[in-house]
Length: 226
Image 1 (cartoon, rainbow, N blue to C red):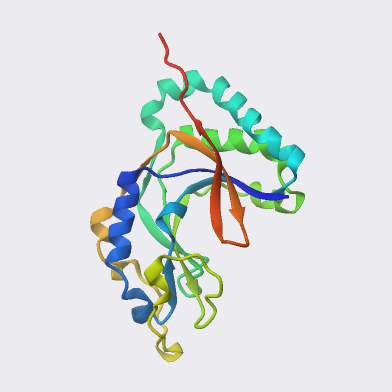
Image 2: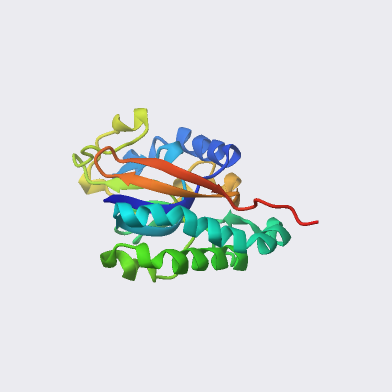
């Protein structure tokens, strides 16, 4: 069984801006009294569909299914190429600022092209999704990119984080503050941040190493219209 999700990865320009935010905000754990661990840059991604654990037989069907979907959508993608992008314009703490587990960039502007793409992916791959996560797959699409995760003091464990992120300042539970986007340096000058979508990736999530392995990278536009 292989733990799978379908995603798009950001280009270098997007990643460089996130890297600048990370480099200028090492103070957040101490300020908020919470262990705030930034995502590794190579793990930044936009998820269209989390499929859970997929057996070998179904795993071999994912690529041809997505290729068929992309092929049928070529005219739509080419004519709407300018719409194959998302503007990430808001930062949120999930599930809430008072009980944060993750810090995410959200895209709130409706993009019908991307919403339709996500719906097509979900419909095409639904038979291959692990049954116990199918309810999750049916939830509304909320385009986001996870920037950081929050951990309780002393509970980092075997977490894959940036090299310098393990040297986090000790936090004082008595001075825990509700995270606030205004405390994040460079954020106001960085967002909205545009993500151009050019590929779909089939990604393995390895629970042992906490790493993501890109199994396939499929271009969204494969033809040109005369």
